[in-house]
Length: 153
Image (tube, rainbow, N blue to C red):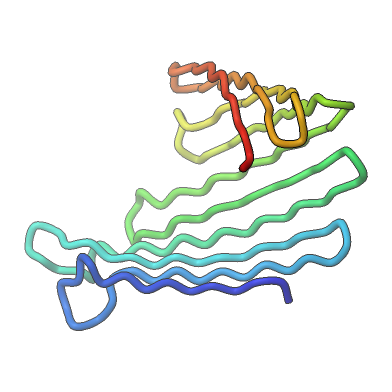
């Protein structure tokens, strides 16, 4: 057993109950990490009815590290009780070679414009500082490129 967490938030409460609940657990054994989480939330529709807008998202993630090579996958299912339920699957790999880390990932969604591919490289300048370049190829047409600089204190 590695970690467990739960959060309750009543900031948008329309009733005496909590409107949002999140719980998650992860387990690590050697190079393998498995995570499961579930989030439930409510919002009010135009009539103030919370039950019609309840949403439950369940996520499962797996990561396996083999030396400098890492493989990870995540599946998220969002059930909001309507025909607009969504499902997304993400798969990614990274490889560390010297001071550089190369990563590639792809996300597939049942929403026709939500698939994308990401390519990145990160170069460590020291144990605390790095620079990175990431390119997002978005099927929806909003491709993005980001340059990052990070420092750990």
